[in-house]
Image (tube, rainbow, N blue to C red; front, side, top):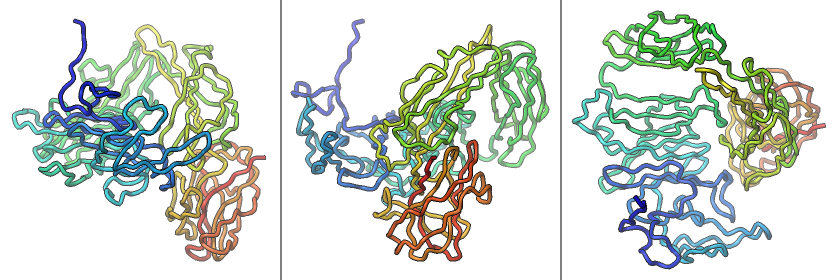
Length: 574
């Protein structure tokens, strides 16, 4: 077999066209991370990531837009000249920092001196859906926040399929779209002419944890792979799930927990079925298979079991309702090996820095079976955090070193950025026992924090205003409202100030740790700045010393509602 391939008819460029490749079917994508082919129509459903740019439109182009495309024929989908509904970018010279005229989306041309292909490009195709960081005017159903679009499967109902869990005919032709950053799944419908008809929430009551992949099985059930809550991996809440359709009596939900999932033998584990329930309210019975051999060893709701033999086991809980329907949950258990504990000792989690600082780090690892740790097997991966995702770099071996936080990877300093150190170590395992990996992590925040990049809030809203830093500020502030950042450490911080606007000069801002009424670290009076759109930095006030990592609350006090807006927070280190 000599291999090779054939080129089908209907691709974007005819064979023999100069400066082209006949293999190209569609072009103009930035990062079509997840796509699927509808087996019935042959259409390619592809979602394309936009650039990490949450700022409003400038002379360089729009905010970072993402797209959902249904590719029905060969086409050019615009990147890097246009994105979204053909919103144009502009050429930028990094050496001179000059911005040119925006590209013409009606007549796309590639003027790059590095271009080895066509200069005059095929006409641009339009996506079905596009949206940015805020709520979309065109597609409000997509929500708001960080964006990571994924194109999932198109469902086709098979009446001959004997499966009792298959999705019903109602879902025929529905495209399943999932959002990694927004933890949601959408059911997208098209009319008979192929035009977008409706965007429905799918299982809105369910809590998805960064859905990563999705497909329908031969049983007509939907299988969902979830990354888990933290970007860096090692998530306890990651998993592979099956979503069944049940008409009438529904399948019970099984939840299984364990007091320990690894350790030396004899390993005693207390199991719990807490959280298991039947959606119809039927009584439940329980059955536990501790070692995965297909034999159920206990019918208690919360049994204990001791693993005397080394090995990798899959403890399974079976929950059955009074109609005979069963749900399952699994807990992997490693007996005879203990997962290593990895900790980033320095920098402290939540350290405040200026990008460009050189930060020394130290990682400690303990593992009872491995004993003395070989630091050449410990790795640290520096990553630039942006919104709710990270841009990892190369693993650096060793327990100690220094990282340069100056590379922002093309992101503007006003973006929602952090600098992250992800450390890990995989132990040696043993005879018949898997190796286990431990993870450590430290997140560093900039000393200058935009108020709107909070991790939590109460009572406030984000106000778009051209004069504010990065175009946004916090408003609608009343007495007792707050915003919060986490994780934050004020170790080494001596002073804090705020950039704000107020026509009244009424109230104060309190900096507190761990709760809105937690330890008071600083109090700053609010001055009269001369107007809502006149911004001033408040005088520095001392910050009380506090060790460790905390959730930091910025609490607003005022005798009248809506008396000031806050643009940014500035920490100063001694």
